[in-house]
Length: 452
Image 1 (tube, rainbow, N blue to C red):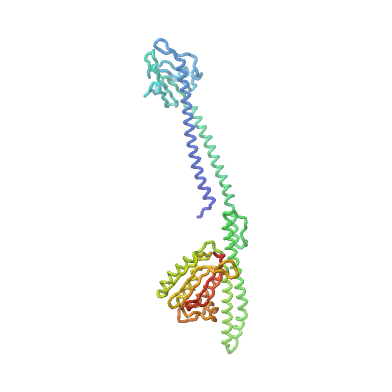
Image 2 (cartoon, rainbow, N blue to C red):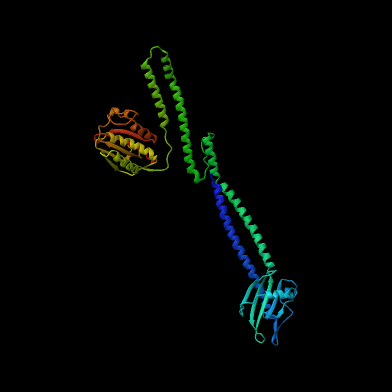
């Protein structure tokens, strides 16, 4: 099942948009979470610095002032706690907030491994409630033992709640942005592809016969396509008109001969010359009406065909078919024509093959341009000459009619030159026959320069 261009574009752009926004959301989430954790660490550092500031020596031990910098250290279950130890088992001081909870259980979960004096150690504390721990070991001269560890602890719940809230807002924001951009691109693509939909509808109407031509208001990108479609539609419409007219004319023209034949069959003695005359008349009528239908200008092609290349291809083929014939190709120019390659091959093939059949030893093909006598523009000219018996002046027009052959000893149906002439006329060109310098016939093909 074919998928529309709009659906394809929306699908791929939506996929890219979702991937980009998801990646952006992931980066923002990681960055914000890291900043929250870093903020918690900075807060705990300030607590440790404050504890170090209020610590005083009394003999060989440390004492701490009751005026703490952060009031949460004095509040029960405030979520901020502090403890000072001389070693993991000797507690020198703990904050009032820590005394209000299970201090022994919390103290047992503290981690003091790999502490280096003068270096902060940040870690997570597991358990029923997750917490952040920041420890700082110092060498305090004058007390025993000399290494003192300051530890600040804070509950993770407020920080995790902030992260969850940010994630929720981020999800809503990016989800809303995704829906907005998908809707916006749907509207934009619908507006941008509207000319294609209009063209599709108008072409369908042309096929159904409810419209005679395409509208002219198309974007620049589609103007060339619209012109070609219009040209093709006009050609098809004219072709249908010619067929209908030909059938009407044919029906009208055959009424009288059919009536004569019907009346002649009633007579006792059949007048054969009369019947033959009416049959010939009917045959001429059919041929004439068919010719009127065929002789119609084709759609102007946009692709240019290299005449020299097509001619070389034809010469190579005929050299195999006529090995005893010397085919000489002379290129005075390298013209290009807006013509169907098959039509050009049929034209040249019929004429050159005819020259090979009736020529004795050689055929000369010349391609070039000829200047018009009373016009500025030049015509593209192709001449084919042979050294055969030639064509008498009186027979040159008749030989261009279908079915007439001057030499019945050569195989064929006598329509080669006639078919070539009909195709040349289709492209508004001309075909003429004259005497060749080789002694045989010279067939000249001329195409208007506008086809180049």
